[in-house]
Length: 112
Image (tube, rainbow, N blue to C red; front, side):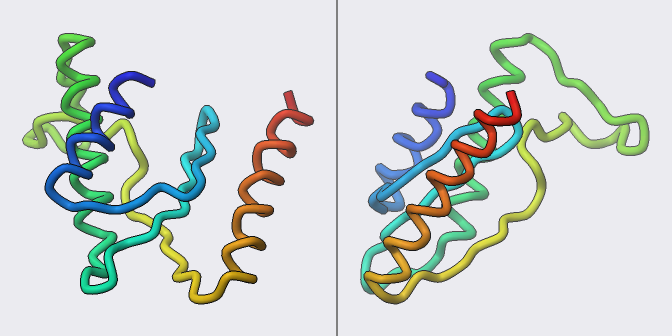
């Protein structure tokens, strides 16, 4: 968790955004952000967060695990490739989205 917090804090310094809600599960990470009015570049933020986190994890594990199919690639990503953004444009949708995040946590807890 500390490495993930560090990744978010590092990226937020250069690319500000507000975290409205976040759910961290063993296999998933869901976030609801508010970006500055003149900056809708969420993909750069995610790329930087994922890159920072993956590199710090590899450094802390002192490994560069290489996938067998990509031997020239320096390390295997710890986080899933790609993002699945959904733009929330209204307060009612924001409330619904937060409720869905809470439901994701409750669903994961009931499966455990």
